[in-house]
Image 1 (cartoon, rainbow over the protein chains, first blue to last red):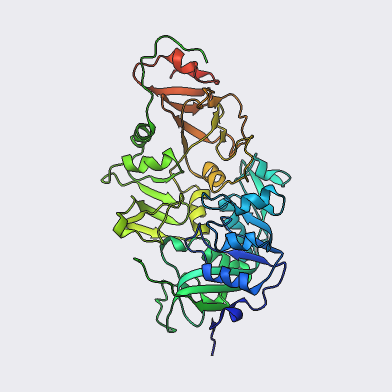
Image 2 (image 1 turned 180 degrees about the horizontal axis):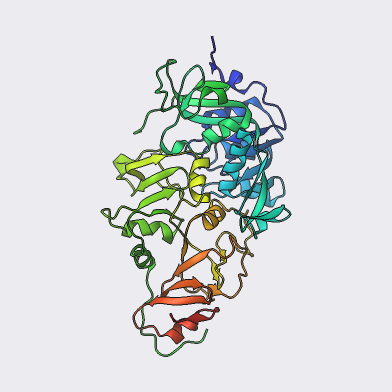
Length: 226
Length: 221
């Protein structure tokens, strides 16, 4: 019997090595796998490369992971938050590397990784500082920049419902990067608000099929409206 | 900046700029609004004119902010404010959301900017003197991907420097993409000739407007 549901955070984090590339779902704090980030902090892996849209807010979660010095490099589109200066302080002190990527290119690089596409040409960022040093080509009359697929050793994602095969649904804009990241990592771990019996999910409504998911951990934190 | 004649005009405020731009959005368009004044545009499109707003974090058919008791913590816009979903709206993941943007499916994107050059280059993501960590978000994708890019911004900086320029001095977001500029003084079409004035606020002379632009302005031919 296939059972991807794990009971403890230690099982969820097992095998995440120092130096790993970690894809972290979420847009701001919505859809961010808060419990898994806390689990990663507890697990202790260091020298990480984190791929996430933002670089943490407040003092918890990713901001805390950064403050603890566990992250060597962040790949990010918008590492700025009114409620956190942790990343900026580290960046100004030269203690963290930043690869700034346009948001759509970031999503597409992970989609490419998940789909086996090694690289692609896109007009986004052509003629800007973010294209410096990259290969360019005119295709169908448009100037394009070559961007490489971006895969992770592990993806930590948040979903709404999950079953023991790892099929997942999401809630509203909490979907964001999570389904894309699930496809792009060698190990995908999902925290879900609900666990349901196999067969309970509407097959038409499954967003991430279990083939992309290795571990599911049940982390209920209250159904909205809160 | 030379002051021309007596000032007999009143520049538009932020809401009025958004209202002026909203007038030009027809029913049926799919529209992405950037952060700042662009976000206000949605407030000036009447609900019976069906314009479908897209938010880059995966919301198509976004509605206005909810009353406090109806906030859903899982439903935010690109500016991370709570929003609602209109009937007929739906959610997508980030790669699909940016496929809508980068694949040319949006009729219009409205962005704020620091500068727009006479050939349609836009600078809106970084200032050269900025000492904070750089952040770009979805600006570069939106600028090249939408069918039309309109910019809404003040005519000049707080210090009085022109924002309509011959060449960008700030880092570019995208090249030759801006189609229109809405400022607190006028509306401009970006054409082969450069900036063509489509509309001006009452009491403003063309000379006074030109005095507030580094780039040469043209009247419609």
